[in-house]
Image (cartoon, rainbow, N blue to C red):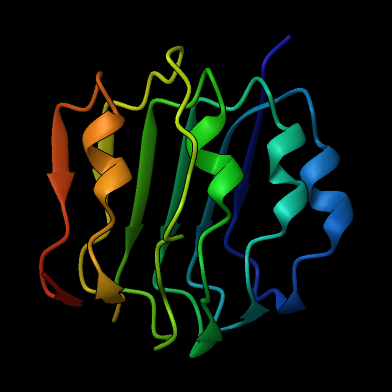
Length: 139
């Protein structure tokens, strides 16, 4: 049984911590949820079957630091975060990437990400595509 979670239904407010307990979810996507606010919950580390995450064109109050636990999920291959309207996006500064990390595509285009590009990205041995364009990264 494969569980895919796609949302384009005018979500308002933050994602609750319980969202991270959708442990059978393999793919999630949030698109065009202008009322979405806050950050992705740290509890997403529990989504051990997750292989794909897409967040496109969500609201001006949605953003913040991506949970470091996302980059430790052994099955996660694709992260696509693009054209979100929030301005406080950042990558965690220190992530212990495991040898079993399978992330192949990290697309963070046009989100207003800021800060330094972290060195731990170089530890993502399976990474084939990295797009950090049209953000405010330094370094």
